[in-house]
Structure formats: C-alpha cells, structure tokens
Length: 156
Image (cartoon, rainbow, N blue to C red; front, top):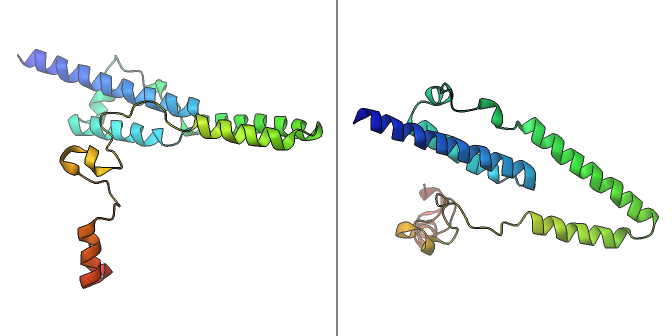
C-alpha cells in the first residue's frame, strides 16, 4: 500500500514539475511575464507537498529544462532589436506610422490570453470563484463601509 502511495506522490510531483516547465517555456515564447507567477505557484505547490530538495534529487526530473531569466531577457532584447531595425527601415521608406500601428496591434493580440485559464487560477469576478471568494486587493462593500465608519486604518 505504501509503495502505491509513494508512486502516486512521485507521479504528482513529476506532473507538477512538468507543468511548471511548460509554463516557463510558454512565458519565454510568448513574451508574457504573467506566466512566471504561474510557475511560482507551481513551485509553491511542490513545496507544500514535499521538500523541494527531495523532488530535485529524483533521477527522472531534468533540472536544466527551466530557462533562466537571463535567457528570457536576452530573447526579449533580440525581439526588440529586430522590431527596431524593421521600424527604422519602415521609416526610411516612409511607411513608419503604418508599421508602428500594425506592430502595436500585433503586440496587443499576442499578449492577450485567448485560451482557457488554469484550474488553480481564481477569477477576478468573485461570483465565478468557489464560495464567491474575492481576490486580494478587491474593495468590498463591507470594507468600504468599515472605512467610512471607523477610518482607513481600521481595515486589515
């Protein structure tokens, strides 16, 4: 029985680690910085289940699969330099404003999430969350009323 439990835990840790790797690769390839928060959440989930050192010591997990932030910034810089070079060329052929508008619209479209959200993510709209739980920083009617009655320092 314990062997089955340990196998199940090992499989779950491996799946969580692979999900963190996928999220970090998605962040590098799509220029999105909000994917790093999903990667951090995945790592926090791993630390809750077991000690991170025991997870990384397993032979089945490749530690070098996670790209570094230096690599991500270098790729971002190369994309920006490519865009800047093309923009200078577009200015030379008097097509600069059209290139700028089209590239701005493309940047907005590429950095807008159009896929489904992860199951661990909470919605910004509290009615879609379990038990109508609101996200941190949301101003609720109760908080507003307490601030009006007792002052802004009364809210924790």
